[in-house]
Image 1 (cartoon, rainbow, N blue to C red):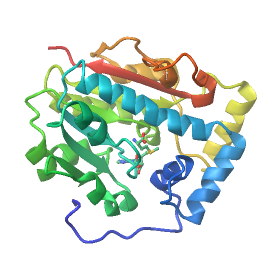
Image 2: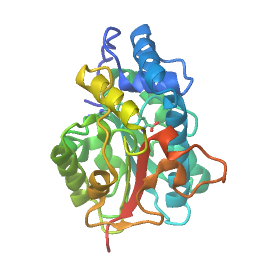
Image 3: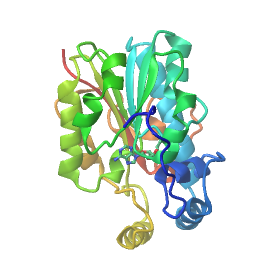
Length: 267
Ligand SMILES: C[S@@+](CC[C@H](N)C(=O)[O-])C[C@H]1O[C@@H](n2cnc3c(N)ncnc32)[C@H](O)[C@@H]1O
């Protein structure tokens, strides 16, 4: 299904990661159930709002690097989220106006907002599921917008951790990268428990077990394996705040509890 299909049904009784993320970012597109979930998580991990904001800041820094220094002109942003300040096409086009972007998400609410992301014919939206990369890669919208014989940046920002199984997540990444030309980039982040005290980590595990959080954390080694076969761009696998920071004053690794990295497919 694409953005041109019938209006999707937005389920107001089930928590949506997209709407909850929007709540933490200070947006307006969420329901009571999302706010309750967001508040419950924030009560246990007060830094979650900082983590969401820093996730966007990481996204911006990486896009600026890719559109600038690396000369990338095509982006596939999977797990787009609801429109927020500095969407991928806005950051990329500020540097290279000809940049093309395909947004992909499986949340009906994101689909209802997709028009805001589709500008100028060179930005489009696929209502697709990361767990089925083939359907994303085969979609008419992607094929019309992206030339996969040329380098592309595949963005998996704050979305891989919704796939619990490590091997399934790796297979998804492998399939996406197999379709991408040499010189393409993978950008990914994943939540982690590596920096939080054992007591907080135990609390996180308990919330995972009861379904009160749904982001499956990965340690540095496990996250780093998504980049197997790629050339890691300096500084490698690091807490998101430490990836080419704009400022010396920044949140700690524990406050963001999110790894990020950028890798390039060898030429
Ligand atoms: C935490 S938000 C991150 C949004 C954005 N990437 C950012 O960093 O601001 C995660 C997004 O991934 C989407 N998502 C979760 N699982 C997905 C899946 N299997 N396929 C596509 N999108 C998914 C959610 O709907 C949500 O919009």
